Image (cartoon, rainbow over all chains, first blue to last red; front, side):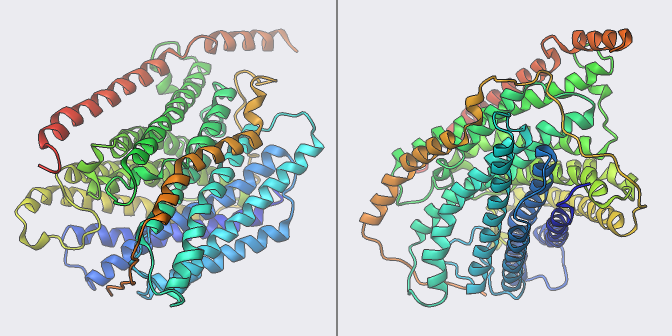
Length: 540
Length: 54
């Protein structure tokens, strides 16, 4: 029995609901880009839906799911109840109220500022206040998990931190370090500006602070997915974790390298010296390393699973893996897509080549492969495993559940590959107009946008299958005792090996040094320069 | 612990104890494709397009 079951379920249901609404918004965008004559199609609706899709998927779905999964992982792997339940529920409601405020501002057309909310695009104050509350709620969740861990540590002096909690602590550290940037942007700049307390805003400073947050946000999404890959997927596959210390090393490297990388999103921005952009480029390239280690360790764990079932050849172990299990297939397909997306990321982060694809459809192709599949498909896959156990019900519509990950993979291949190619051919992202005012170059993008729309339709069908399975399980699943949640054992217990990897205080201190090295001088330089600021614009 | 269990554990460890050769092959091929893809984009797309300021 999981004591934090209701808390985890509350968070996960909000995540699934946000996912369902966001998926519907995505279908509308995909068809709109293919120039289909949809009812209510207009520029206003297009940008409203792009904003709603981005915010609901990238911020609401992910954050609530990560919080829900975090409660389960912490309680089960520490084998003790979550502490401070009242703070945990209070944090949930603060985040929930913030989400409702953000959703109101977007859906009423008062915040079509896209998920990056770059000024001088200006939203209603409730949008920024709601976003701040969502983050504050997540900080409360961080506090609860850390407090639970510290109490466990006092009760188990000398014991090794269980790997799932090690991964979640890394997630929390990355999130706290990242949100310092966005908190400064929203609280000091955007809320006073949107309320009319200040007249102008500095767009470059806002973008620096946004990307201080925006790139590590990717790792806030990704690290809980890695926790699933390392500690749950090998168990589902019937194997063992290939190496516990390698997994711990990966989480530590993400603590160090997640944040001092933000300028690779700002290669085209003025106001930041080229040398600092190059420094962030190097840091970004380093961060490919832990993902390569992850690919090796998790695939090796699957190879172990195949060999335990009798495989002896180079690749016959692949046939022994449970491809019909939706949790396993989701994780495996998410990893394959992440491998392709990772290649695109290396192009994004290349100082010169970034110019080739900056603000083109390539970028949306890239992040739909990474967050849109590596993270989202992993979360869907682990939901098939987790929800029946939390609810004490059998998974309903299991055939749909088995098909859904493959449908998502196929839809995303069509959508994302088409976007990469049209982006390489110069098609800008975030543009409503299909014909680009009669531009001749746009003719070569037409087939790509059509394929992308077809992919979007498949993705929507897949998303609808997932939501249907979840709600059918929640409402009508047969009540039955479910097997306990289990984590993969390592092939070899870590014992006292590289205990330094568990010293989170040391890694936080080193991460802080790297952040100061990466951001202090450029921020001081910018604050020392003469800036003029901008009034706000609300196009609709 | 029974003899049968000991035998099974021993068989298991001999099956999984070696290097994960399939994984090394997959990750190696991926690494090559990754580097090759980057070089192709650099030399056959980026460089021919010329400098932005031309």
